Image 1 (tube, rainbow, N blue to C red):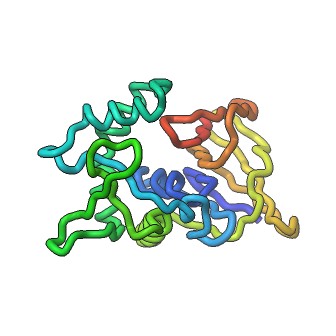
Image 2: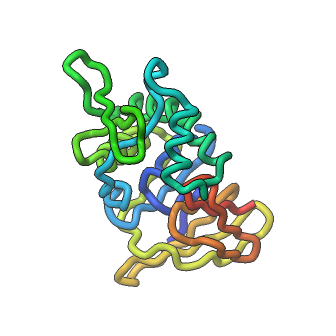
Length: 217
């Protein structure tokens, strides 16, 4: 069995879903989920998300400094700066997707103080923030006509069977090894799984910021 698309995303966690939702709507996108569309490592994340949402009591500079100290200054300062400055917009974007972060009685976001942070800047959903993010992002993806999520693909990361110019075939196999599928991708293949430093005939694995991805170019 084979399927065709413009973009193939292997992984249905927050990284894969965010990638799918951020791409242009004129692209035909397939997202592969290893199990169900909400069963991923992202769904297990309990802690909240840090972002500077209160500029009266917080600042980008403070958040950057806190992050650098927590990382013993081994962090990539450019990546940290990008993360901190783009963080607020990403929070508001997932809220538009339907993420229900905890709020105070007056309706304001209930930002907490956690280890490593000098200001209250953590937004969360109870102790299941990851599951809430995935739930809302899957629901949003299902409203997009150009995004298809295929569940229960099992151990799909089998091999790239060809990669020529801007086209490649990717072969997947389910966990019981009873079903094979070939995905023909005509633009880019984006992996959000652990395939660091691999090169499949021009298929290069890279890590932009904290997202593990591979793009065929």
